[in-house]
Length: 138
Image (cartoon, rainbow, N blue to C red; front, top):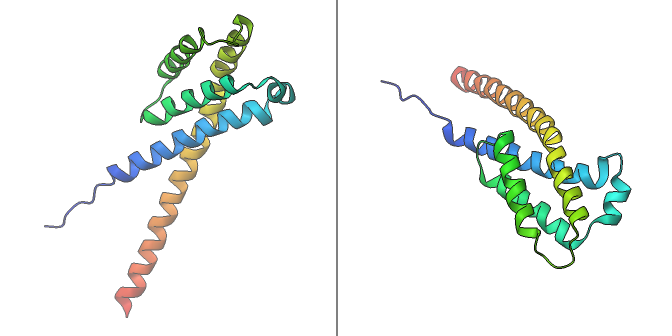
């Protein structure tokens, strides 16, 4: 009996890759693509960048991310930075708002990446079939 191949490892790998790309896209969008990107770059302090990095790490650790989990990660990180010296309540509020708003951009990037992964998988199967046919004819 033929053994059925299972691609769960590949599917998980693609999912993690798509989530990482979406997280990176959200950070890049905030610094370079947003309407107020120049203002964001001027405002960016080291603790803000560290907080963003922690949120991105939290997103990368999860295989399945949804809005509630993402908002929980953001809230947890913002709580940790509330007591850090050199942070004001207004800055914390603004960073938290920006991180929450980036969920929509992450979703768009994730959907774009998922479509590309699907297309790549289909192309790979077609190429494999062609190679198999050519090899079997020889």
